[in-house]
Image (cartoon, rainbow, N blue to C red; front, top):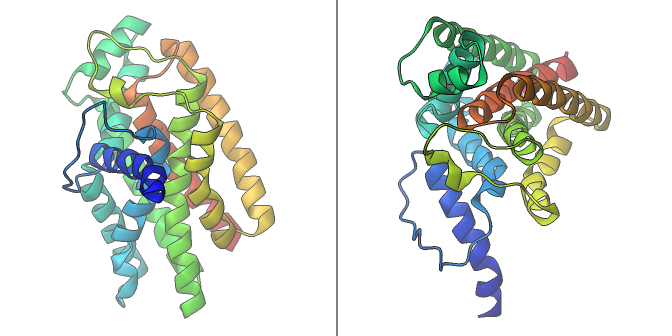
Length: 262
């Protein structure tokens, strides 16, 4: 009974997060009376689920480029292109708008502009090329498989720390009503611990200690740069920019892994 009372709120928070950030069908009781830990802090755990489910091509004897393509495709299907959509809207708004209000207005427009098209093409192409290079760089052995799987997991869990950091350090801005407001929260120490557990575990497996420390430090620098950029452009963040930061994070972490294995 006591064990259920302790685990229950975490399970409820995880389920809410899983339903929000993926297309995995799961029945959830959304009533506020149901005790639950903030779903936002489980975002890296959702990344872990996406990584494990999308890693199935690693079990087959395929070329590295085809494995990378199928892994990326599966991840997109699992999330419904949730973060990719944020990247496209952000690039259209942040680059195409002339002031804060216009940028936020453009980001709410469902139409795809030239900046959105360019950003998604370069983002997916970069991820595919870097992931293909990474798969080629890791030896074809059982230990290599463990490194590859851990590396793919760390890409998805660490990349989802980027939006959590921006969410905690910037103010939420929007025009009118927003669907994302229910999943916006500034994490406290306990929630940060929940979020960072999978990051630390898979980071230790995928990286050397030096590589992990350097990846962490450079990630902080990149997050700080995004913080400054968003503060200048819209004086805060919204759901689209959080998705964009996750996509930037994925590319950056794959690059860090490739450098560490080179």
